[in-house]
Length: 287
Image (cartoon, rainbow, N blue to C red; front, top):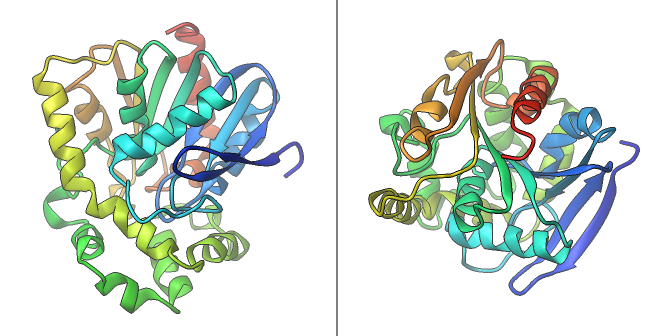
């Protein structure tokens, strides 16, 4: 992946690994589970000729340090806010997939004047609109929230466990190759990485309460919002659920689906995703 540079920033609570590429208007990309910044590799390659890309490993994941707590999305977003300020970035476009979506929402609510636009990909915001766990159909949500048990059962079997998600949650199975899985397993096999990943799920009830209180306060996101889901719900994609969720707290929401994609949209259909992002940013260059 030519043109990508790796960096570490010593922030107040974490040492954050992040990659950068390109020049131009800044775009911040936030990944989900069981992924790292690496899930954006195809998107970065397509955007970097005209945009300045910043893609961090979120708290506890990838090559970022793993504090014992702070996995509620307001705190995770605070790390990214600190990184943005560390880099001297003023206003930027923001994109989040999977748990990166609720983190991006939290960041947009913390610094609404800095976020030109918000894009959420195949996830809902906890507490707002459709249930993020889909009434229990996403069985792993409750499993991951169980104290200690997931770590005990998955440790030493990281590749077997994570590969099930890459396969069952994808419609385009060539989007995540064996070599890509090697990279993900490299980081999720590190000490504390499983606990950190499961902690994103354990914080979901707190996230839902925080977001519901924010909605009840009358807060509305002021920036334009693009809310996309994968079209193939057979592969655990969410369809129009992201748009339904964001419409609960934003007035300028553009919804849609990415055809022939399951949950892992940035890896399954990067061309279609980038096309939607570019059209959205062209329509809303300054928010």
